[in-house]
Length: 258
Image (cartoon, rainbow, N blue to C red):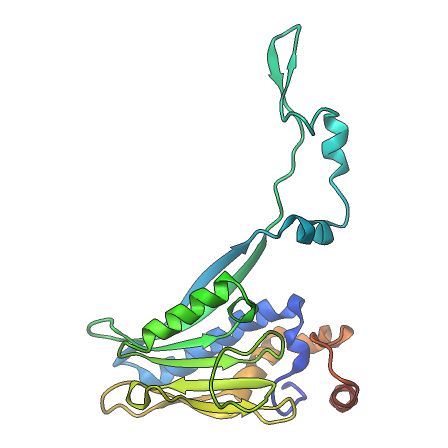
């Protein structure tokens, strides 16, 4: 069955669910576009992997407690990582831990000209790494700015309430946002500010030359992912993240009950 919400389902934004949804949603976008733009264009799904090593404070919060086995195995571990047996003059092994890292996978959809493989349009479904202040956000903004000087179009789909919005002038307050940048409209972008209770729009995807825009029905794509993944079996055992305010929480609960 489809997602019960008229627009974006805020429960899909949970960290334990988002990456699975993000990858599946990007795959649905690729399939929808491929049926519309073939045989003149190729639609490719590119995966990028971000590896983040938390700071020492963040790592302690994540682990909860130190690795007891490490310290029990070698009392001298704090001052030395190796010990030598005087009788054998051999280095003895100890138990050590590899610092935990956060791995985030991110999918990007590219439409390329079939003949020369030139990039025509990039469709980016934003992830938390795109939005959080830090090197990943800065890298993405640099890539976006660089592409605006190329001949390619850019479609950004932000279905995350969490994190600071990417910089767009004159955008009203909203929970979600979709933007379409066309070279012919530079520096302007077409934007769809979307509220939590709004329906998700059908958006255009620019191609090039005299080719008509492709279309993406975001709600239909979301419903396909929701149904195929069986999210209804476990999604509502936890609360949305970020939390909804009281009024929106009551509004959302009515859909879950139904």
